[in-house]
Length: 172
Image (tube, rainbow, N blue to C red; front, side, top):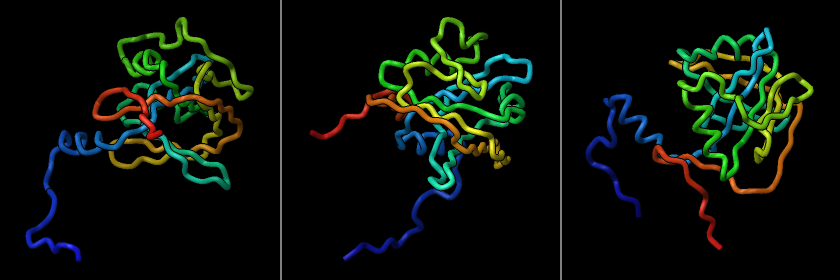
C-alpha cells in the first residue's frame, strides 16, 4: 500500500542555486567538446550536458550557455567532436573548463579527425558529429549532431557528482 501525501509535495518556488544543487545529485560523465573556427583556431570546453538522442539515425546532443564566448564558433561549425574523458583525465577537464586558460590546447595531446576537428587523445570514446541543428531553449543553446565517426576503448569514465570529480564504484 502506498502512502498518500496530504500536503503539497515539493517546492514550486526556488532559486537557481537550489535547482543547481538538486541537479548536482545526478552523476554525469565528463567530456570535452571541440571544433574549429572558420579561420582554423581550435575551440574546446568541458561539458557534462551530453546525451544520446537516437541510435537510428545516430544523434547526440549537448548544451552550451548562451553567454559563452565560444557560442558563435559552435553555431558556425559544420562539425564538432565529443571526447568522453577517462579517469585520470581530470586535469584536462579542469583545463578546458577554466575560462582563464587562454590556449586550452597548449601542450595537450590531440588528434585531427578527417572532418577537421581536434579530438582529445586518450579519451574513452570520441564521437565526431556533423552539426544537425541548434535550438535556443532557456539560457542555453542545444546542439544536435549526427555521429559520422567514432572511436572507443576500454576504461573507467571520469564522473562529476555533487560539484566534484570522481569515479564509479561498481559492485563486484
